[in-house]
Image 1 (tube, helix red, strand yellow):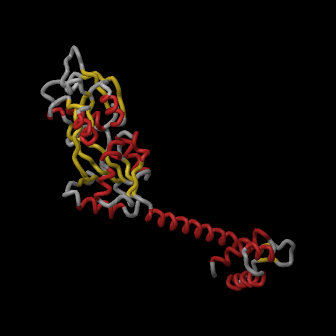
Image 2 (image 1 turned 180 degrees about the vertical axis):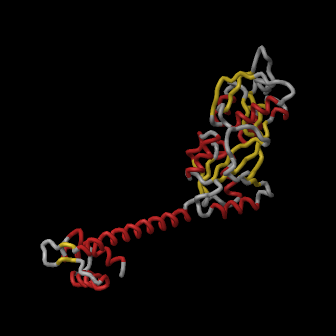
Image 3 (image 1 turned 60 degrees about the vertical axis):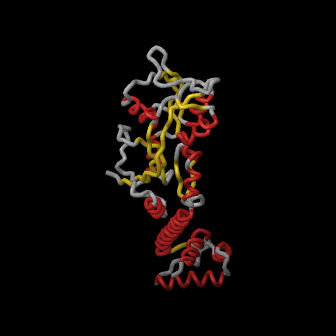
Length: 310
């Protein structure tokens, strides 16, 4: 018995008229009637009461209708799932990352790995804080999350046991200031207790803020800072620093042009630089069917710098 025969029977049960049901199914009435008769022969039961107007189903026909609708619904759902799997196989892997990485790291990284067509930066992630990335991985909103991460363990309040990661690269956040008319930094670390330096900070719940706080507490001399602004985007921090509103820690990739042209200057020596990793995270059970293949490819180029959940 073919699926289209079941579709014929359901159409007839709803329309209750042979010729109109045949027209609805886009077949000739003789062909349509023959299919219905063949179904009745295979079931060994009369399914249609042909002596009524409009025609009606027998008790066996009512039961057969329930079965037919159930089978057709299962076929529809299976087709839908197969289509979704096919689409999942062809859709790009989505990559969430902070704005500064999407602008200053990801494009060249994708080009180096020849991933520009198979990986899609997820622009909705630019305002996310640390926990948002892992919630998005859990929801399947993104497939990968690229984050700045402290090189040493510090408490972040995030359970990382279900998220393997690869260390992709290193980064330093440098303390920078605008320059005065002599090309010298307008603000210089460590500042003083009586005149703390105005500080353009990252969001207090960000990974950068937590890592920097730990880093500064370990310095041999305290930094005297007064936060005058909090921001989620490195570009905003850079703009405020460039305008002379205060000191800020920014990725070396972001500030290098300003340091080269003299519009920005280091506000402290290398001791004040914040060392970080770039970590690429995924869910332990990824949804994208091609992600593990891609992960292995990245892993082979990470020189063994990979970690699995504890």
